[in-house]
Image 1 (cartoon, rainbow, N blue to C red):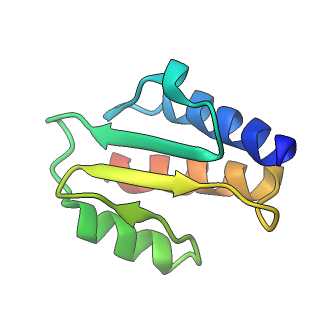
Image 2: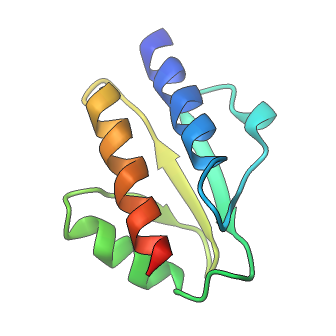
Length: 93
């Protein structure tokens, strides 16, 4: 479980560097990361999750602008890196 928490912190740090994403990095204490979108991002959450699913990345949308990402034993460093790069690309469109 400690590795999952490390991956969550890595994920949160990466998310904090993506324009349009906001989160409280200090709130990441477990393997769950919650983040939301700033007003500059006009894509709805459903569109973002659909585009991520097309890349075999599954995250939860908690409303029109909020998300939950969970790391677990199947998620490794490469998965975190892929998620961050894919999300950055989606939000840049």
